[in-house]
Image 1: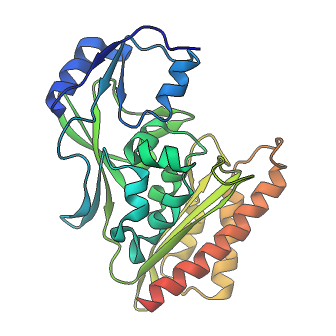
Image 2: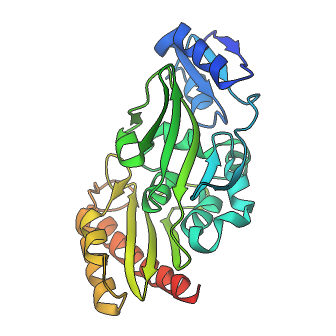
Amino acid sequence: MYPATFEYHAPASVEEAISLLERYGDEAKLLAGGQSLIPLMKLRFASPRALVDVNRIEGLDSIGEDDGHLAIGALVRHKDCERSEALRGRYGVLGDAAPQISDPIVRNLGTVAGSLAHADPQGDWGSALLAAGAHVEAVGPGGTRTIELDELFQGPFTTCLEPTEVVTSVRVPDPGPRAGGTYLKLERKVGDFATVGVAVHVSLDNGTVRRAGIALTAVGPRNLRARTAEEALAGATLDDDTIREAAELAAEAAQPRSDHRGSADYKRNVVRVFTERGLRKAAETAQAA
């Protein structure tokens, strides 16, 4: 099938993009990578009146340190993250997630910000960035607002973004020098959506956990944080007993459903195993820093 007829606009600035979104309201869609939107349009599950292509807006395609954060611009592609040295070491949860995003074609075109705005419960970036404590900066007619990812994700393919807002960057707070993390993903084949994914990130201070982030993919109506497990780790030493307890708590936080990919009990057990593995790797990285 072919998409329904639509108007095409290519603004040169964020302000121009917002003006177009104000004109068309919820009849417009932003286009960056288009790896989720275009297939929906071809199947006519989505038929926007207008596409607002933001790819010509300068200044949105960089990755770098900025005011105590790692800033990922709205036009940064998955492949940019996969190749970036900035997403190593203490930001390892992001570096590990990047090469596991779909396939090379999608990684060449798709964007991190677009993935978050799509809010697929099986999306890998949602969990990796939740674990890292990230937020997004969105600009609308009323100015810029900061949106924590817990607030951004409202349900399957649903966010709190207004139709007139443009995400301009994703920002990850500096976790400190002794930090590490990883993203573990179970998939039926390379490039598939996750059957289960677990993102783990820890920051250490004098040998104990200053902050822990554990987020789950594809085991709930949205990317989930295992809050009880995170709280159990705060101030603790990452020994065997602590890691096993946190893994059990993460499994309890999962909300999986049985389907053709596996039973709910199977998926919950994968969460437990991946959380334990992830915490061990994160601890090793953080302690070696």
